[in-house]
Image (tube, rainbow, N blue to C red; front, side, top):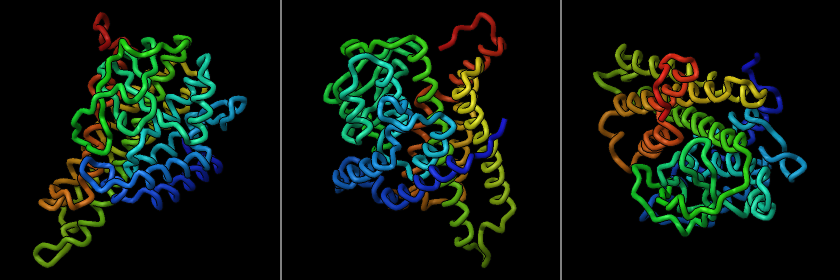
Length: 340
């Protein structure tokens, strides 16, 4: 098993990084918050560029107009979306919805529009009725929980709900009102796993940005005539946060490999990846807040855009505790205990 990226995977990741860093700086994320001077054209331009790169159809089979790429190709790219806190449902559209629509009967038109960048699709498959990014989507995928039947709703069926991360456009829907998609149970289970893995990848990307912001800050901020980064306590906190992140990142790649190779442990590996990524991201966010001090609590400073996305994302697609329950059940560490 080789965790290093191939040349093609690295090239796709680097191209996505260049595009997203240019098109989605922090002020673009800030503009997605309620009450901000939003520029819909800017968001549309980011989505169009992702479509031009082939990102939106990357997980769609070539026979259906996509690139036919696997999870190992997509995970590094989704991490880049996390780095910039992209205020669009890239995981849900490109990694969850696109393969599902390709597998479902009668969804050719919507799939074609998705691949071409004309349709944005959000998803809430955990049974809560809450759908992140419903506010920017055209259609919503919903279900009563992992592996349950999946239905399609128009985005205007969602009622806006306040979220700690205003850029997510959270909505609440009536799951029972959705039109069911004709899907094999294996496709439904695979959709959940892809969503969980995509969320883990984005949390890793968010963590990398929070750490980079913190490292730069502790080099510049001075106390007692020296940079605070020279203090042992600050070094230890940042080192521990980095350690947690570096343990989580390879697990996401392992889970991607398991999905691509049809491993029997795929769902377990995906759950482990999300648990580690959620824990690491929350640790990194807490460390970033502490080393920045008071400035981290101001909305004018960019840090909160990434920290709040971490807090929200760590609880979607199953939080760390829920995912650890899945791992334990897969390993028979808690026989007789129901999975939530």
